[in-house]
Length: 229
Image (cartoon, rainbow, N blue to C red; front, side):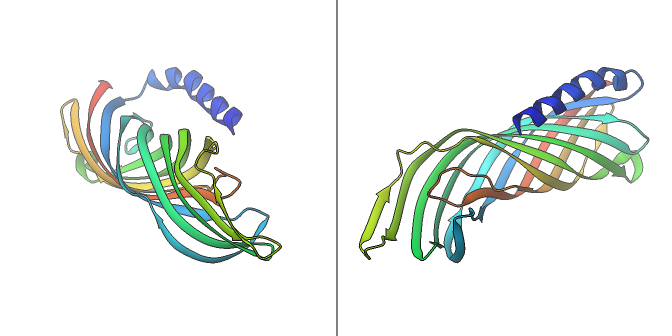
């Protein structure tokens, strides 16, 4: 996954200057809120999900930079880089073979999010827009602040395992994003507000837990400046 991300970034680096020679480029800053919900998926050894009792991440904040390159009268190529810190709380019950497991955990992570998407504008002066594209989430600094596993062993003896001090895996997860927004402009300056839905692929963070992805409704605002017009 890391190699694929690196190759994509190198491709954009070498093709971007050629596109800039005859096009319009806007850059800006962006920030807002994320209403996150974890998506739990099950490893091959976990054969049955009994119940998802609680799973929340709540609202967190993001900030970053955005840019868009005009390639046609109403068509742009857009790229964003976000940063956010997430705290995930969940409790889930599932079966491993014939054993019923209950995991309760709190996971903190720093997430860097890359977006690449075509963006289509409409209405006079390209006032409104929609987009849909590719997302890559890179999670770093992941750490458990709480982690308890309850299960009954082969001798029917209840067991409790504390995995708070286990290392949480840092990972990269691909995903998709769709969004809609408005972008009024004043000469070279512009302001925008938008709503975005994203969904990332579940990835492993610990052997005691199911794979975890993210579903997100993101509200953002910011301003832009045309550096090439």
